[in-house]
Image 1 (cartoon, helix red, strand yellow):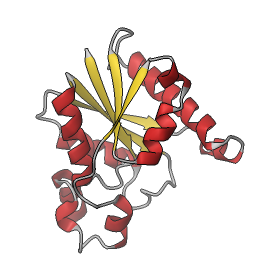
Image 2: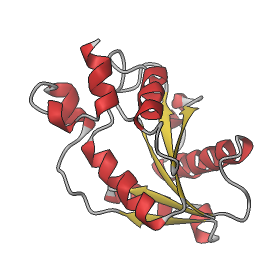
Image 3: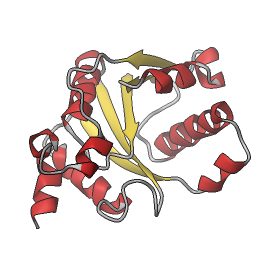
Image 4: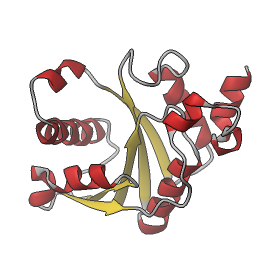
Length: 172
């Protein structure tokens, strides 16, 4: 099976993320959206990781092609000891292990990571998992110049760029 992976902090999930998920859906049999983070990351305090996962799960609840999962960054301190590529090598291993252990993927699946961030794509392509052909990387063209940072800094201005489940959470 062809499996697409879209990962991020999703603090909040916005229409740019939805563009990436849409591209992955068009190319893959199924898409897994991984909410990543840790307490105190850039999503806090407004978007705790558990709430992000809840919103993403709700956003795709009726989509039989998209599955959501949560992956905690168990050791944010590694950034003090490893270079960026080492961190990405480790993180990709953790993501794949998590997906395998939770039966989102099996060994014979064709795995492609989808991202609209050129630097993420470069780091993913430089992992041992990519070099050995275990994963592929698809750099998506951004259709909308929006980011979580822009939304966190001016939520009202970018309200229409936030996906529905997050808007419902923010209104509550």
